[in-house]
Length: 281
Image (cartoon, rainbow, N blue to C red; front, top):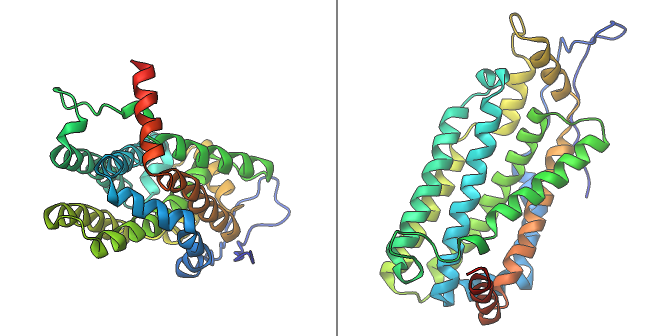
């Protein structure tokens, strides 16, 4: 994969380097999507989505995995909001609110469409078998390891690159499911309800400020009054290149292939989920 490069300016020769004239990061989100969209065309993904839509159990499992994944995204935003630097991140409060909304709406939709898979208290019977949390943590850890190996790790750098990759994945994966839903022969009420939820998530993702915009705004932020720790975070941010963002996007979408590949097993995947739930009691 050909990397997309970015450059930043900095003060040379000072005891404690400070990035005084940062250049905007060159990050073409459309080009990156084009580079990773091929993952969504893999036979296991196409079949996985088809099997998902053909089985009420698997479709409910997908919606609940969406809810769990959005909950992980909400937790990621909440973690960075604890930092002083969060005051400098545009849209962060709205992003957290939207992640929480997507989580709750996906849960409510699954409950209303597939009540047979929920207990009397509204608890999803297969909650422990969901894949959204494991997926998110796997991507987070691989990205963390890579940044550390390259001397570019900080909580802020991990947050920005992981969020970028996750948003690219959501656009492609949920978009592929939405296209399949709209072409499917599912009952119209079911088709319409699922399609509306996916459209809402995709539409709200599209209204976020781009990560490149946030990255550049942070580099240019007024550092007067900031703690040394926060200034260090901003200095570390200047170490990131567009290649780091592109790598996170490739990882996020590539890992979804494994996740959707389980759905491609159709009835066998459902049996495995049910057996695991029984084993846990």
